[in-house]
Length: 140
Image 1 (cartoon, rainbow, N blue to C red):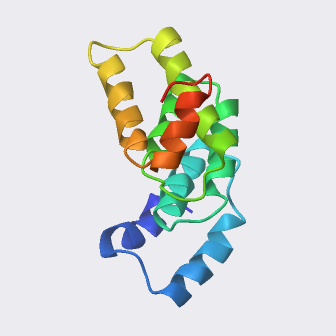
Image 2: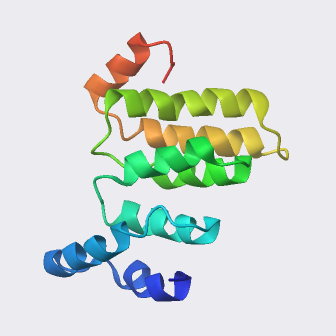
């Protein structure tokens, strides 16, 4: 599967419930995949389709990713996911930003880019999640 095959869903909008269930059933079996490019495409598509286990699988890939570019991709893809997070997953996700902003290198706008991804993710938090993150060692 390549981006040519997922393009219709991305361009034409979310399919009806029955079609979505069929697509998710098939695609979820392939995620995570054996290649980085396929994982990137599947992550974006499964996030879009609101697949429940995309958070767990994507955070695992993010943690295991050997490059900052791969890690950033997963952080970016997960930024707008509103539902399905556990408190531990939220802490893990936001702690990644703290580490990335301290340790990773990029151009002049790199820190601002990461901060904007983080801000988008913060905007998805409920009041309860914000309070819970604020009370943990990971600042939201």
